[in-house]
Image (cartoon, rainbow, N blue to C red):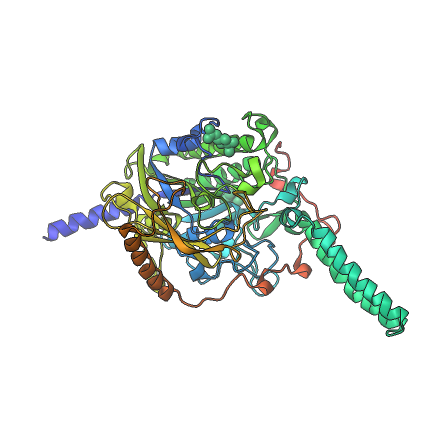
Length: 565
Ligand SMILES: *[C@@H]1O[C@H](CO)[C@@H](O)[C@H](O)[C@H]1NC(C)=O
Ligand SMILES: *[C@@H]1O[C@H](CO)[C@@H](O)[C@H](O)[C@H]1NC(C)=O
């Protein structure tokens, strides 16, 4: 008896002595059909595909949201955004302005705060998009270094169409934006002139009213017309190091920084958690010179090639550091391809819908690859539903730190499934939200082979189209009189709902409706990070690295000053 305990303790301690490193490779806006290992025959992604070859490919891997900010919050915390305050409420579906006060609450426990308790070195390199300030300029309460990471290099906010100088997000969303803004201004000014003419107001009042009205209208115009000036910058830890971001060559710099971090940790014999949060495949897509024309598929394809190369460099870094055998590698994307912007938005295969749509799988079903030598089998595939929120229990288990018990987790321990120790996903239900509205529920009964999807709302698509104008609205989604139920196992493209008169339908809807009731009860009230007063940019906090805002806000990261782009 004592001997067994002693041996077990010895085994446990030797397992813990070799804590696995964790490398998370998170692509942005990459579609389900963008990779060779997910059946794409026109692009070559050998490095990313090698993770599938050496590990497990999840064919029904789901994000918690179809836009970046809420999806990323769920990956890092293992909780639905509606639990953490990170569920968007209105048309603003992401944390657009880094100089606002919205962000991932400090009270949330991220994967980095878990690994830190086990002595890991943690870094996030690339896109953060989960806020910066909370109350005051410079408090950096929502900064990655305040969420468990020891090193940060990258974007506090996001990449944006505006950085490519071809499109402006505001006119993609509202094509007549400038005209509308001007019309509102002109109508009001005309009314003022009339008041002046008929002597209802004197010249001094007129002038004051004119200025009072013109200045804010101009400020709004200036803000939306200069999104790059307001939002494009790179930080290294707490310092602003580049403004605006030089997108060409950025992948190479992220790789460089990531490899340096990895070497630093392994040289010091420290286990590490490294999140490479790539800026590809989000628009604006720019690649370094050597990837121009590499794909014969235009800018998007070239970006994919550069991303695949970047992933290859990170995997090579693991081999060079001699830690490949002891590293868990996880590749995924924060949401599906953005269909509204065409070829630059990526490819969701045959799945319906895309980024921002909410319920349809195109926006939430993403590549999910995991390799862990000695733990997971190689070349395995699971078609069972899995979630990005499952990464936190896997990590907690791997590093030997229990998850806090004071909160509800939505991630599940899927390792037995990935190891094929069990056949059925631990997720009996997965809740598919659009913003803070529940639009669908995925149901995997505890028997059989089928996964169902119960859809209560569909996106407000343009007439005769399968897309919205730029981003579907969650609040204007169409509520179905009778929910649709799809057999996601044999009809993954959601083409033919099963008959509402069928016995199957009645069983599924009863099970799902009761699960929804339970889920709703489980949601505790939380302060929303998507209130307007939190989201609006604090213009007086605006940084400017080389001049006085808005003039000469221009600097280049000194560390990579001479690297080619
Ligand atoms: C492969 O992905 C590219 C890039 O998104 C896309 O343009 C192409 O249509 C896809 N091809 C196939 C055969 O899946
Ligand atoms: C690696 O370590 C060196 C020396 O301590 C330090 O200057 C550098 O900032 C570290 N780099 C990263 C990416 O952590």
